[in-house]
Image 1 (cartoon, one colour):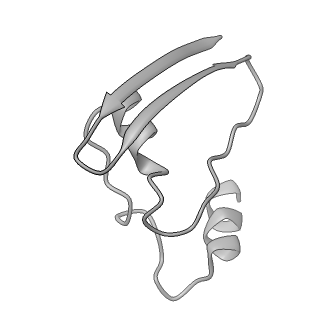
Image 2: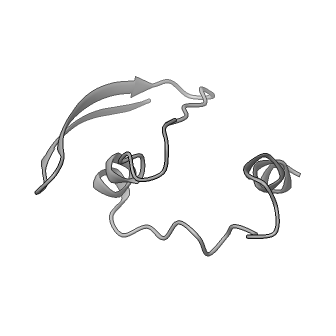
Length: 69
């Protein structure tokens, strides 16, 4: 089980989030570009790159399908 309580203050963002993820559970962060989806992931995991594993010629759905194959 992962329990997280994230409080982060940046110049243009105040993030206050708490969640619990059970084993086998899948969690997704959804929102438009630039909305801060990567911020909680960075807070949990440290430095994280977004584009090294993505294929720019594929859609978002195709990239996810490739990763699951």
